[in-house]
Length: 467
Image (cartoon, rainbow, N blue to C red; front, top):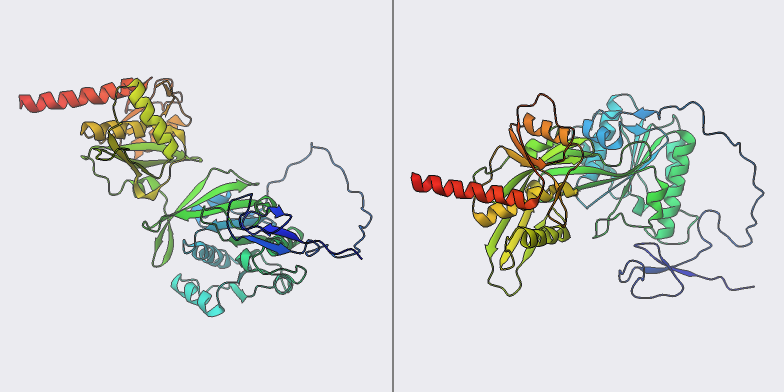
């Protein structure tokens, strides 16, 4: 009888190796390769002969389209991120750093659905029943009819949630703690995680229950375990935030039933997570309007406009190589803006340290922030505060030209709603709001913007001399 072969699988990325090694070639992590039996898992085993398949019915693309049946939670920010609520029969994966508030968010969602008469089951694999009850009491959810269990065995969980009436929502916290009798490996390994997720998704599809899975993340912020898990589920949400700030953002990165660029904003308190209906007021709450180096960026997150303050500090350096420190933005993008300012605008920053920060711990991902970043840098270097009632947005190219961005009207309307009466935007922008009383200053190149800021500094100096 031939000797059964074994595989060596990385527990971080799922890469299969022919032999053990200290470092994974796929992700570069150390001491993550574990020996596993490839015959283990559902469907595995020696001498397993494939059964004859059955023909399925083929249909045409044309036909009636039915809306996905959803279960609104009543939490507006969670419903926004999921596209209107949980879809029946779907599997949702939520990841986030330890202690960021994943269990708190799901407990509040479970309590909200239970108050509406839905049957909700919360299965905890990391905490005892008493610990979960303490959290429920703190969040004011102890009086709801949420059913609770503390179990990690996949077969026992499926047998438990299959009894009685079909549940509307099942929460598994977390998938790394699940283990199955059909897989010969330790809990948390790639085989066990894949097997447990497959079983949970199969139950959701067969019964129509919504399955919410909590996943751990690596130090890079990615959901731990095999990447195939993110492909198996219907939606992937990341719950992120900064420990030094109270706000939390629920970001959608995959959604088969809704948009993938929406966010939900929450604020952490001693009573749980509070929804933030207007995030712009949160990010601009402690703004110093007279400080140089601060510019307000009018950004977009999905269909939601968000105003956030960008802070820059340019100081003469005593080092041979100037420092470039960035918080909340792409450091490579900052290097590009600095190069454009020096090459096309004559702004010399080679002998200065540059520090850039996005207020509130928010992270900007769109290139429309280029003009706000450049304005903050020039303002800090010149020592002149920018107008307090002005917002900035626009993408800067390597030639120094300012390119238009999308959703111009939404950005300007949000700015007007929060009391901003002026805006600096690309010259070729379309969709300007009709009937607006704001002062829109259109620029077609970055040197034009720098000249305007320098001109305002010269005017301010002349006013001081005249006074």
